[in-house]
Length: 409
Image (cartoon, rainbow, N blue to C red; front, side, top):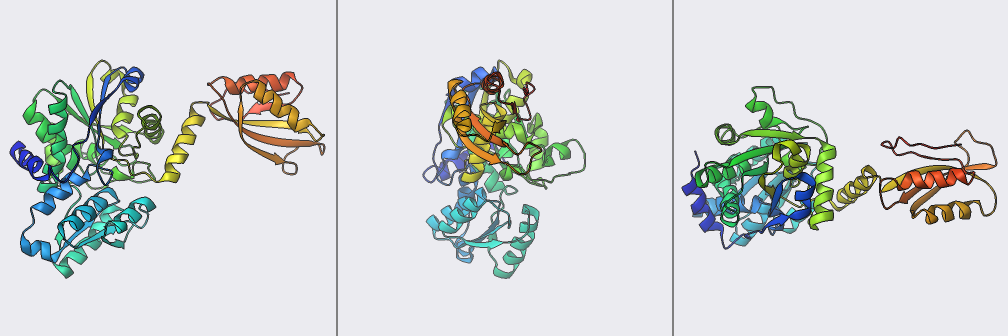
């Protein structure tokens, strides 16, 4: 078992090579959740995630012959970047096996950090087989993303910093993939403050540790925004630690993960990937459990593809009824569109996109179907616009799936 002494040694060893990230209080997220929210911003590490800690601790532990032989790792992205960066700093050759479907930004960043990239398989388990094959051929040292004592000890240094900055935290909420992060954090936190509760969070599509703890088959599959914790196989080292020290592992669905990503951007002006926002997602989904408590949330990483982030933010506007989809039947006459846009503007709507369709709807030949995306100030803005259009004699309705106030003529 990893001990607090191992983690304290790791903390001293890696201090000059990683950032001591801030622990910040979020007043607004506290008002939303009913809890006192403190965010450990590991997205501010150089490679954008907590993985810097464990990777560096492992690399520093290598002997001279191991350094000369180089290292190999498998990763969906964050561990890859951490190993690549610190290996380059230390003059160690690194090869990284990544899934073929890994986010482009993570593959590109890992290459730019100097590692040799091998794309193999569709998940971490398949990458592990290829990494083992290369290790056997080359003699390189495997730097496992989570099932390694030095890696676990490095990740556990987060808890030391959180409890030094805020000793009165009631609970730590931690994302869980293979379990290296929460195993290290739980080991340190429970040694420093035995009364503290440590709670894990997994994506509902990948409930590997959750099911393993309950003695259920591990059934993990599907596209998730939380690719950093989309792990099918819990670690042999990490699972016993989790079983002993972690009170529970909560599951969060994709809409809640997306909402958490969007809230962190909008409120805290911080970028968190899906896995990085999982701790906040768990609090959002379990308000009654956490209300009134002082919580430390690990924002474990911020390496999200820009296009995916843009999609998440736009979907958040739709879910909040701040971006509405109107379908309008417009007479095909001069000035008709101008009249429609004037009414929308008078109701405070900002037109984002307009699309005309004259052929594929069951409408008279002199009618054009117009789909309009409109940004509104609040959740009722779309219904106000529809009402104004209908009163002006223009058939219109809301197409948003959540909307129940469809009006038409």
